Image 1 (cartoon, rainbow, N blue to C red):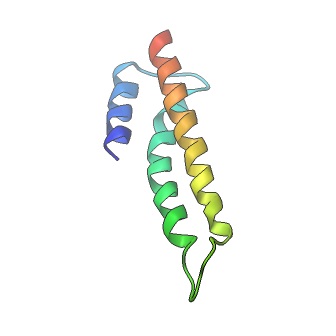
Image 2: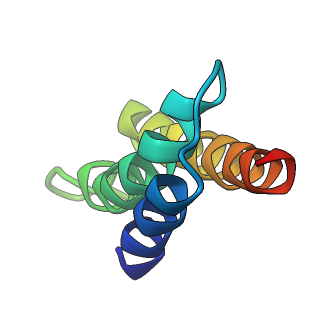
Length: 79
């Protein structure tokens, strides 16, 4: 969550605009929500030994984090 706050401060300070702006502003904090949800919700159930389909939230969080960090980095380098 701290990375998301720092990312928002950097995005605001650099006045990030353009097609990468939504990913740069929202990708990191979205990952901070999706990844723990994927861990916990995939283990719900009595006698569960393997993760259920909600493990896909974990992968979606990883993709969101990667897109957020890369687009923020590109936006900062081009600003």
